[in-house]
Image (cartoon, rainbow, N blue to C red):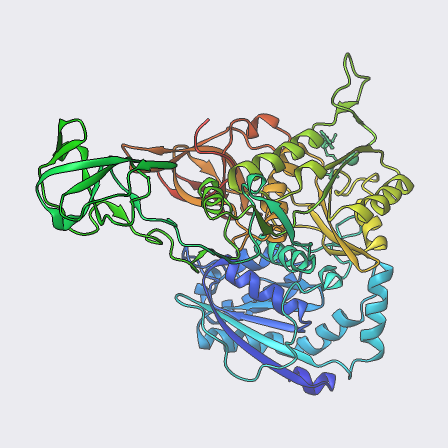
Length: 621
Ligand SMILES: Nc1ncnc2c1ncn2[C@@H]1O[C@H](COP(=O)(O)OP(=O)(O)O)[C@@H](O)[C@H]1O
Ligand SMILES: [Mg+2]
């Protein structure tokens, strides 16, 4: 219908997704990136706990379109008073109109019947809105002048319990994977109020995917590393043993090397074979039983095929030993290559070098190993109110010490210590403080992007008049997202600056120390790990039982700082909250070794609830 009125081609895509906020959000953001004009969802708008469609969609909207919601409710209320138990949501994200429909076919018909006639006009208005930023103005012009050139797909999602199913029907115009450098796709139409952010909220999972995609583009040089310096590194090659191990037949026991066929009896002692050397007479008489004293790990002389352990023997007199048990051929001898046959792949590309891996390569005579490169990082603290943390004495009013620089540097080192090397530690460039001045910031970015693979800034990304970082990065590079649907850390911004074929990732963390730390763990660490060669970019996650009652946030998923430990009585991990989670409260991070992942929901999580958590430190202090 919309197609006829607008004189455009209609393409339709269907998808069934489970009643999970993340699934619904991921679908919606993917489709809005792909410039679908209309998304209709069905189901999940009622009162049961599984009805989460409105909660999933609301945070993604730049503008609510209450009129559509009211029109649908009014129509349904005329038919049944039960319509008051429906919670429809309608609104605009980017250039997409999104409307949630109820689940029942009858109700869908009633609701659609009332809104459909207005939809073509609505879409037309959305597409023709003037844009607030100059970048978007270009895009707007493109759309306005060439409406026929673009397919105007229409899409329908429906939500239900159970597995996600592949959509059916005709799917066209859906060529991009989401988050694939569509930085401009993230801008709203400038409609979130004159003073609102022009960046739409990106769900956390999607933000991480965008970061990983960009991280994949940074191809650092593989380097040859001395095994003694390779702890925690990811290797970039398969390693094969050139020699067997052990390379000679070695005794497993302290005792006597014998010919097993000689059996029990008195043996002539010909001398010693000790680890690292031997001293025994090679002149033997085949008629008599003879042996050589041997120590653990020493080479078994070729003529012997077994070792009798010292406990089963007795010295009769000088150079005569009584062997009191018979042994089978091969007893207590480690054959050549029994541990590691020649040609064995002992380590695989992607393995992490640990202590034993270093020992293994040392054993095999391998002194260097090819490892993935480690990113060079620059850390910049922005803000006119900052002074170096080493500054002694009283500070002027309004001045604070820069705590983000030493904290972020320490986190890089700690994460590397605990979970594997993910940054070039001796090349972390602590740029220090840059004031809130455009020229200073710009020249710092230019300089640092020449040398570093990753620039981490803190501060200046909110909506204040001195928050210059986002517009500057828009100018200098590409802003991939400028807000994330999370608490704390909403203004987190991720960009890339590319010059002379070199790409630098820029993480602009919020200035607030708590927010910057949480964002570092959630977003910077996966990038560091991806670049350093880790196949698993996540920090470890465990389920924990809450020892506190915790309030959730209906607006945003929250990352609650906590201390977790194993409880031997409960047989599970338990978590103690670090107290008030106000993002300005530094002590909410003290002693924290995990982040609880709290869903975006109304109400409380009761004590005893099991919750997912992300480990950010060791399990015991
Ligand atoms: N490097 C830093 N060390 C300690 N506190 C900081 C630092 N940078 C910013 N802050 C504080 O964090 C808060 C937010 O700073 P602001 O620059 O407005 O960050 P943003 O705009 O990114 O949210 C302010 O109180 C600021 O003084
Ligand atoms: Mg600031």
